[in-house]
Length: 115
Length: 111
Image (cartoon, rainbow over all chains, first blue to last red):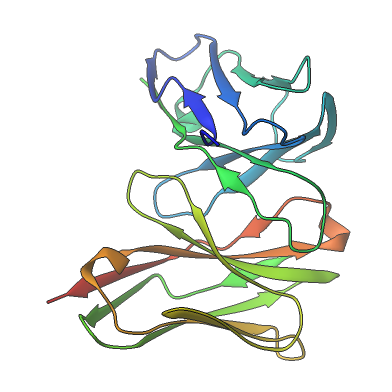
């Protein structure tokens, strides 16, 4: 069990640029979540995959955001035409199955700074 | 919709006991979780409650009252390493699968 891995750890970009983050979940975990967290706030749900299927997206998620999990293993989150308000920590989490006590395992996140 | 409230900050001293409260409002409550998050690190799972009562796990305990929409996390024999943010999160059947997190309570433990 190597844990949930995210890269890069930090990304600095200029407004208007596109960025892509990668998440490698714990192997055998078929469920994968993306969250966003800003300073002093709790994680905010963005989207969720079960295997390769994207089953839920937050209504707050701008259409500039897109996520994929092509083979049901790693996932990517792309933000197009970044804005300063996109600056945040992007967290990925994975779990094994849907149960009432489903425990999420989080990665250390990608810190995005949009200048 | 959902609403989760917890104090923003708390302070305590080593060896003491601290209780972090969380109140919530959901349409279809389906479990409450506590996570610990050290600065710059990933949240890590602490506890889970779905039925009323107290769940004890070492120095940490979590309590739930569904009728009151209330939970608390109790930390005993505080250590400096317990300085962290404590996140209350709920699962709501009406809101889908994902956990909904509160803003977190930053606990500072001093010697």
